[in-house]
Amino acid sequence: MSAQPAEADPFDLGFEAEDDFSPPPATPWGDDPDRQILAAAQTPPPPPPPSIEPERAEADDDAADPFADFPPARPDLAGDVAEPVATYDPDLTTPDYEPSAYDAAAHDPDPVDDGSLALEMEAPEEVIEADAPPFEPLEPVEALNPVADLIADVELAMTGAGSDLGVPRISIHAFCALPATGDLIEAAAGDRRMSRASTTVRMGGLAAALEYYQNQPTPSLIMVESIEPAPRLLAMLDTLAEVCDPGTKVIVLGQTNDIALYRELLRRGVSEYLVAPLRPLPLIRAVTGLYADPATPFAGRQIAFVGARGGVGSSTLAHNFAYAIAERLHAGAVLADFDLAFGTAGLDFNQDPLQGVADALSQPDRLDPILLDRMLVKCSERLSLFAAPATLDQDYDISPEAFEEVAQKVRGAAPFVVLDLPHAWSAWKRKMLIASDDLVVVATPDLASLRNAKNIVDLIRQTRPNDLPPRLVLNQVGVPGRPEIPVKDFGEALGIEPSLVLPFEARLFGEAANNGQMVMETAPKSKAAEGIEHLARLISRREAPPTAKPSLFASLFKRG
Image 1 (tube, rainbow, N blue to C red):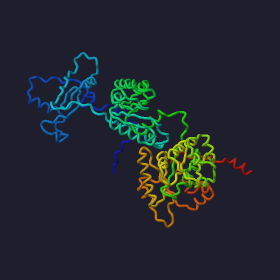
Image 2 (image 1 turned 120 degrees about the vertical axis):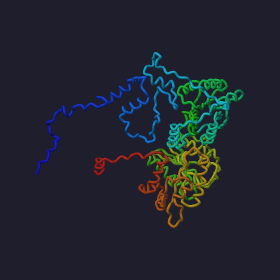
Image 3 (image 1 turned 90 degrees about the horizontal axis):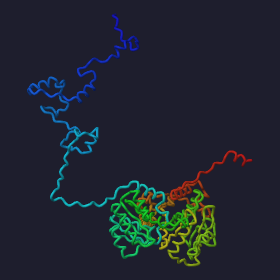
Image 4 (image 1 turned 180 degrees about the vertical axis):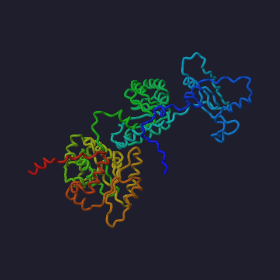
């Protein structure tokens, strides 16, 4: 057997560095191809001799081209004459590109030149068509402002679009330059927070305001919209200031988001400057902020419970909801029972007060914080009860204004005020539903509740377009032997997803009512108790404080 040639050992150290790292042999393009190409590009080619013939020049070019025998890279460019490829060159003008002064300055390495490399250009002639219409300034288009929309959506979610007391009884005149702004102010004027104010909307902008107030007194608040430049806007505002009565406030609606302009407007006495695009709630809050009194007492959040029909458990849920706010979430709450003749709040909390809602409604003007504190019954450290007399000794013919005034004063007693509204429909109940910050509709899965709940929801959506929709609670679900509307179909018919679905637990709720206790006291681990606490967290936007775990030493000392 013949010996096989030995393969090269990759680990053999007997190599010559000069052999392995010697430079590559010279190529026809030079020692360094990159440098040769760069030098060729920078060196201008010599002019051809004048005596050379065209046929010979073509033959020499073919002989000198090393890629002449290669096929073309693109078949569509094959032929005697190849189509030129469009490339960008700042020093050349192509049919699709016209150099500008910016291009000449950008590609000039030395801005201070002697004139030899200056690019001479002729300004393009302006083509004017004979039948071209005259130029008209475009109407300002409402710009997109996602940041403003995001802030408004966050304020709507965090505040529920209604934790303020609204605008006082003032007169407002608005002069709009754009129709969209007029529609927005009219929508804001129809909001429940602006119900006490008298709002008038006119078109014409700031110029129309100047003309109108030459012979007319100015109202409490003037809103003017202007699309004029800043100098003209300031000049027109100075003219408006000359005809304004003392005490008149001015809000300017503009298109320019400029902090310098904003500061100048405030320096000249303008109360507020708002930039488009606007939304009803920020506009209402701006008006409310102008008339906010620091001495005004604190106003709590008003949450109203209403039943779609009698016997659905609206009062029971309202009482347990108030208890959950106070005892589980550790927030101050007042439960006001407005069912004067048949209220059950006193029974559910095992209280029998001498004075209550009926006494306050009979003389609402006398209800001050001291008298209100005497009428409230302390059910716990954080929960107070404003109970109804629940007697038929007299007829309760009370005006809606009295209910509104009493409810307004009760809001100053605690951060949360829960209203237990009766099933009967009246003018004051309508006012309470519209004026409440949050509304909870309690229904059972039957046809009568569905019809009445839809009427209530439609009314609230129509009268409160800028507020969150009401909450829906389906109670007594799963009664044995009773045909029921499915929960999904019930919510789809109203256009509202139920916030809480409570099963039918007659024994649990009956035992709690007979003992004068809440469900959380009778069965704190039950599904009903957990569901009511979930609803309290959802509406109040608060979480229960963490409970401190007892230490080992405390348990040992307790045993000892």
